[in-house]
Image (cartoon, rainbow, N blue to C red; front, top):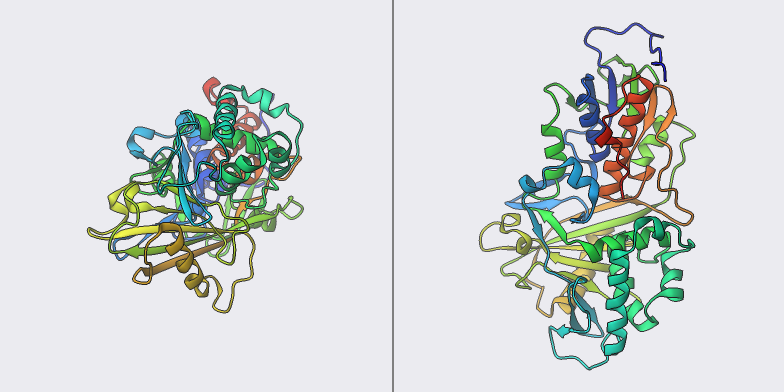
Length: 447
């Protein structure tokens, strides 16, 4: 393919080859791929921090991550683009805790037989997963899913995750007892209207890998991507007001010309900059942070609220972050992060005003008094996760026209994996239009 001629406007010597708008995972991944091919890049971020939904902050010695992002060791793209050893990934305990009908049930690791169940408290033989035969069927189903090639999963008839559970799940008791709350937590979709193909891939990764967090919090992921950029690449506090294929206009920094522009913002901001771009619906995510004098659990295990309906609290899951890594909290304190899902009308006071309801439900889930817990903060993200209803396009185009590109989790899947893949695909499209083919290893298709 001949190189595209990007000479419609005069560029200053200080202007980069490529402008990337947005310093989230997709934008940083695109910038890393482009600078790795010798291009000069400027990543323009409107805020004073990088990472987007994977940013974090410190509060009185507590580390508060935005949202409730968890990494999965089975995701291939993070393994290709990141130094996972340097991230010091801290795995969650195998399996999950299910709270159902006033009791907590321990469900073993997906890689192990689910026939061998134990309970945190003695429970009846027929718990939320049903009979031993039901549990065996679930274990076999997850085992088959773990070894099924991705291509076969993508060839399955596509419906919603909820309908797929009803039609081909291991039984209604098991589906409702574990898979529905687990998938709701992993997809940020309590109604399970997500594409069944996406749900299959997410469950496959859960069955094959381990959920984990970096020792320094999720912000360590964008931080590591940014560390690999040449000095001067990243510019914070630069608000882009309009874009074109040959550069961008900014609110306070003038025009920046370029040979190509990559929009790597969230989907709503991208649609503002590029009218006509498809705007998806979103799953809201609200995360409550509480500090306790001692941990309500002695291990970093995901606690799922499996009662249906979820009730007024809307809690999906909770996790003691200081059990994942002690650095999440000051010495002698525990940090509990609790995720509420769904588009809901909070009572007076907004998300913060809903905290007493969440606190009361946490007392039931953890089986301990929570009146003395300190409410640290709440983070409400109304546009946290782009929805992925059927039919879902796993590779939405990242090339608008020669010189103008768009990437983000809304172009692939609404996961860390999807964000990184979309950034790589956008960089490859830029390189092709500039007549600089991407290295062979960078052209690998993501699972």
